Length: 202
Length: 122
Image (tube, rainbow over all chains, first blue to last red):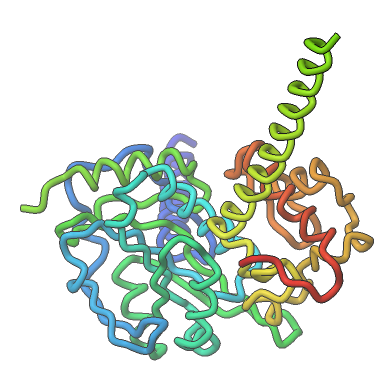
């Protein structure tokens, strides 16, 4: 019975891990503070196309903290809520917020062309960079961050996209330092941003 | 008598200035928060329900100029509650404080009062 219980627990844990890293809208459990060490298993430099139809390379913003979120402009709930939280966090950081690069990586490149992204990011007073690319490019970036996405047909032309909705924080050295749940408190996000902002570039 | 009259006049004037500053300040702050939180993504810069994502949503976002169509009420407190708790297809924005939601709601109410066809300042 004990071994059955242990097996069940192991199965449950495995299922949770799979859900956290591969599942549609499941959330990784974000920490309330920033780890001192990087998370080498997450993230990588990448190249995508921004809302001005120009090439964007993550390494080009080295030296500035990066907030990264995978979403899509037609998202009816998760993305607006998360972007609101990110904007709220940035507003709490003060003048240092201008150093932060906030990236909205589309997981719906079919609809989210640079022109569509330009309208979307222009709807926020918070400076945002919208990124898109070919399917395989977006998939490669998402995979590096253990983010998953999957199109869900709704029976209407307005299909949905299930996607990992974690908020990723990359430090000035380009290392992924922390990730947070989409519904993390803006105060917590702001505190994490302040920590990374106050670090010197080596 | 002159003193009391002058005092009363000063109080009235002070009250007028205070109310005007308060009202403008709340709406103006609400306008900034509306832009900060990206409300325009769905509702549009001018609050007409025509944001860039609106055409790809099954449930059309509210046109703030059409107060009669509000299902949960169109007062500042009603709208603040809708922002915080969600309504219909709109999710709950519990990260927005009561004060901020009230100011955003005040901005939205000001949009209800604009004549048809007029545009709010983006």
